[in-house]
Structures are given as C-alpha cells and as structure tokens.
Length: 423
Image (cartoon, rainbow, N blue to C red):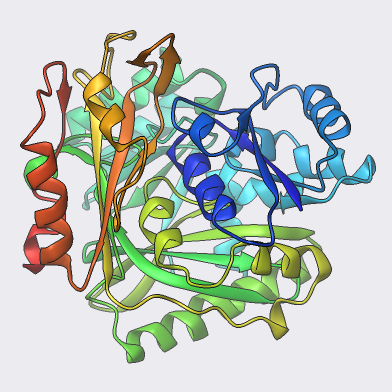
C-alpha cells in the first residue's frame, strides 16, 4: 500500500512515521513534507496542499492508493470531495463536515442543536454591537474568529478595555483577514482541558487516547496562545467514569448529529474539551489530528495505522479494535525565538541531526525545518517536537529534558514545565 500524506508539519511527520513502521504500507510520500519526512519517505516538493490538481498528479504518477490530509485548510476547501470525485481514496471530512472547524459559528450551532454541553455565546460582525455586548456582560469573555486563523484566532482578554481592543483589531483593523469577518464572544469556562482524537467513518466514532496539550507560549501558562508547545498522553485526569461520561454526553450525540446534518465524514475528529465542575464541555472541534497531540498519541498506538484508515475507507470501524502500548508519552516543542510572533528563518539547527536515526523510545518529529545541502535549517515557528516514551510521565520528562540540556539552543526556546504537575 502506497500512501500520500498531505502537509509539512509535525503532525504529518508523525502520521508518516506511523505508516512507515506499518508492515502493510510499502511506501510513504509527503506533499510537500519537511526536513524530517525525507528520512522516512519521499518528499514531493511540487505538491501544494491547496492546489488539488498537483495532488492528483502526484497520486497518478506515483501509483498512490490513499491520501491522508493533515492540515485544516485543504479540508475546509473541499479536498476530500475533490479527490473522491476523481476516484481517489481520501481520509478526511467533506467540505460540509470541515465547517465544524472552519466556522466557529457553525460548530456552536451544531453543539446547541444536538444538546451537547458547551459555553454560551453570541456572534457578531458589527463592532459596535460587540462593544455594547461587552459593556453589558458581567463575566470574562473569550473572543474567537469565526474562520481558520492558524491556531491564533482565540483571544483571552483580561479586561473589558482589552476585549474592546481585540474586537477592534479583528473586525475593524482586519488582523485575521477573512477569518475575522465574524467573531463569537463566548463565556469563559474554567476547569482543566483535555483532547480526544477519534477515527470516524460516517457511522462509527472510534476514540483514541485522551491527551493534554500546553497552548501558551511560556511556563505557567503565560504568554500568547500558540499551536501547542507540548503534550502528554494519556491524560492522568481522565478516569473510566469521566471517559464514559464524555462518550455518552459528547461523542455519541456528535455521531448522531453528523447523520442528522447529512455530513459525509470519513476522517479524524478532534474534541477539545474543558472538564468543569458541572461536567465536560466542548471548547472546539478540529477536523484532523492535532499538533502536537498526534506526536504523543500515535507512538502509543500498537495497532498499525493502516488498520483504522482502511476501516474508515470501508466503513468498518464498528469492527475495529485498537491496541495501545502501556506507559506514557510526552512531547516538548522547540520553537524559534519570537514565535508565535515574528521570527527568523534559515537558522542552522544541525544539533538536531543526531536524531535523524531515532533512539529507542525517543523520536524527534520535524515541523518547521528543511534541509539545505548538508545543513538542517529553520523554516517555521514550531520546529520539532521531541517525543519520549516511558513507563510513566517522569521517565518521559527526564529523557527529553536531559537531551535538551545537552544542546546549544541559541535562537530557540521551549517550555520546561510540560507534564511537570504530574511528577
């Protein structure tokens, strides 16, 4: 089986790594890939994830049997529908289904219509109406762009003045361009966050393990929101009782809703959850694997990744059982100084090449990297996720941070507190 993974981030490297280690997969291609994916498969630099014809050309010229789309933008643009019309097996939701991530308003309407617990909200396109609403509320808001904003469209203002400034930046100044034509103002809820990734074939939702990521840029959850600075799996806070409550109150109604909305969905669904004192609530959906959640979940999957992917394609997830390795996984992201703001590109990071051959239980998954001749250089904000597997979270943390401490990280930064509260 020959599979093409669309994208160039850490999530795509990890998907490809899992497929590369699956005996049922003969070859993995990446379109376009990054500085790590070329070590385990074939990078196709002419593939543009938003140019669907380039994907079809790659499939036909390389005799590829399945396409797995990693990032959200091509899914929101309808890549699944396009490839299916061409007779190409594809893993991902339809364009209609991708609205669960591509439109916060659509997702909120879906949640409310299906009676799935989530925070109260209002939608706005008129800045003055938003200002008036902020003046009237007596609770802390969360302000979200309706559209896709590369993980940066969720803002947590600390005062009403801050909230009005955020509204101005989005709706008046156009900070997030088309993604910010509309916003929602949501009641901030408190508790602890967890993520549940699931395989979906249109009839069945098959959950993976619960994970916990760290979105803020700096220690103690300070700084700006990022795409994720680290992750752990499985989440120590999710016991069997809470797991069953989440399945009953959130996952099963979501499955029912996909059918009621007539949404073709053969892919991955990400439940971003807040566990409050009133129970679990949905913060967001993603319609693909998370990053860096994928980097700690898939290394724990004992079942070959091709098994659930083929079951999605054939509509047989109800007959599929996933097996998992014992123990835990922790991932710590190395990022360019300045991220998630502006940062330099082209910085040499050759010290990471020592893990071009993974150690046992230690893998470096690449994201914003590329190879220039003999050098490995930066090409993005989040550069790599250093993932360790062990019997427990302490062992994983020790493995990662001991290796980080051996390196010269000039021009890079990382969080030193990933999983620290559990050891």
